[in-house]
Amino acid sequence: MQQQMTMNQQQQQSIMPEPPNVITTKDHLYIQDMLSWNLLASKKAHFFAQQCTDPEIKQALEQAGQMHQRHYDTIIHHLQNTSQQAMTLQ
Image (tube, rainbow, N blue to C red; front, side):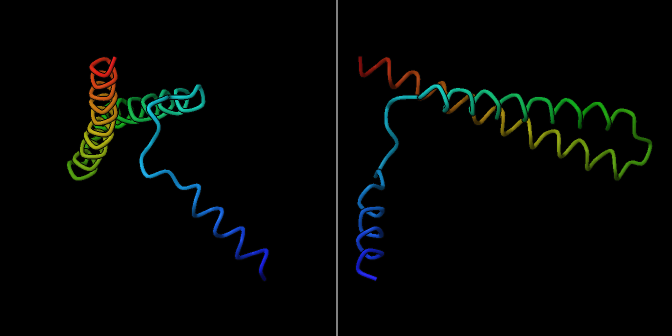
């Protein structure tokens, strides 16, 4: 029981209040994957919406594509802001 409480305290103390100013290789690869997934999903949704004849399904596919495009744009925007901030600090 005492050992479990000590482990919980150590885990709580290791929580970072804010992310580090470094992007690791693993982080970079994950960000690259997120961008690829969202861009591909956006393109596929748009392609299938163009093939669709049912207006409701077409609209749902377009909305899904737009959502993935927004996610892609948000990630890019965040990376650009972070990059600009890092350059300002140097």
